[in-house]
Amino acid sequence: MIPGARLIILGRQGAGKGTQCVRLSRHYVVPHISTGDMLRAAVREGTELGLLAKKIMEEGGLVGDDIMIGLVDERLAKPDADSRGYILDGFPRTVAQAQALDALTVAKPINIAIDLDVPREIVRERLSARRVCRDCGTNYTADGDEPSPWICDVCGGDVQQRADDTPDAVDRRLDLYEEQTAPLIEYFSSRGALTVVNGVGHPDHVFKRLTDAIEARR
Ligand code: ADP
Picture 1 (cartoon, rainbow, N blue to C red):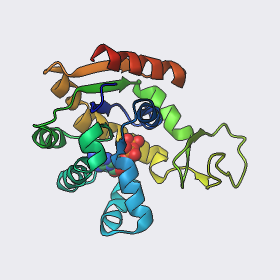
Picture 2: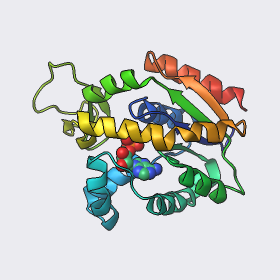
Picture 3: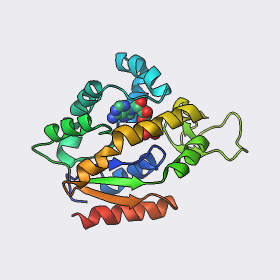
C-alpha cells in the first residue's frame, strides 16, 4: 500500500471485518483502529466511557455520535495514524459520523471505503457460532464440541461468547446496521470512493480480493 493510505471498512456485523482488518494492518503496516475494540477495552478497564458503553453494547445499541466522534478524533491525531494512515473498522456507523469524519480528514482525506459484503442470513449464522478470546480478541467458531473452559491457543485467555452475540442482540444490531449504517454505502459510492468486495468464502480468498481492490485504487 501507499505509505499513509487511509481506509474505511464497512460491512455487516460478522462480515469478517475484524479478522481481515488485522491481516490488512499487518500486510500494509498501518494501525487497525477498531472502535468496537476501543470500547471493549474501556469496558474492561472500567473507565467512565466503559461504564457508559457497557449496557448499550450488551443490548446491541449504538454509543452516541458525539462520544464516538471525540474518541476517533483523538485516535487519528496520534502520530502513527497521522503519519502512516489507518484502517478504520466500525467507524463511521451513521451519516453524522461520516460527516464528522469528512471534517476531521479535510487535510488528509480517506482514500477508499470498502464494503465487505456478506448477506444477512450468512452473518447471522456466523455470529451465533462466534466465540472470542476475552484477552487478545482472536475469533473462534463453536461447532458444538468445544472444550469447557475453552482456552485461547494464541494467548491462553478465556474464549467466550460476546454478550452482544446472543440471538436478540444480533437481530437488533443487524436491524440497526440496515437503518443507520447501510446508507453510508450510498454516501461513499455517490462520490466514487466505494469498492464492494465479496466477503463470502475462505478468509484467504477474501483477503486476496481485498488487497486486489486496494491495489486497484493506488
Ligand atoms: P459489531 O460490528 O460486530 O457490532 P464492533 O466490535 O464493531 O462489533 O462493535 C461492538 C459495539 O460497539 C457495537 O454494537 C456498538 O454498540 C459499539 N460501537 C462500535 N463502534 C461504534 C460506532 N462507530 N458508533 C456507535 N457505537 C459503536
